[in-house]
Amino acid sequence: MQEAAAVGLRFEESYYEELREKYTKKRDLFLAGLDQAGLKHNVPQGTYFVMIDIQEFLDLPQFSGYSDLQFCEWMIREIGVAAVPGSSFFREPINNYIRMHFAREETTLAEVIRRLCRMGELLR
Image (cartoon, rainbow, N blue to C red; front, side, top):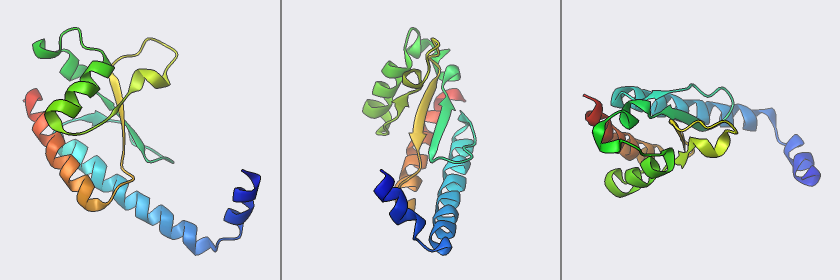
């Protein structure tokens, strides 16, 4: 890992500036899509992972008794989008978050947003 860090330290500052701009653009695109879908989420400050609060879904009768894992499995089957159960990142028994990332091509993000908007319609 130290060797990789040493190589990274030799990159021009412009590399990191371009990387920051690229991921800021992707983050803003993805978060706008989550807002459009009506999904509550955090705003990441230094990562490409977003935590989405699914409590409103878990409160719906069709998801009664679902865990975040079961909800993620439902998303894959019914929406065609994969997420990671948030409970895998907490020591506490927290079950109402899922984690997604936006480190994808913009065309892929646009399709994910389209699918998540379909999911968000369940809340309306």
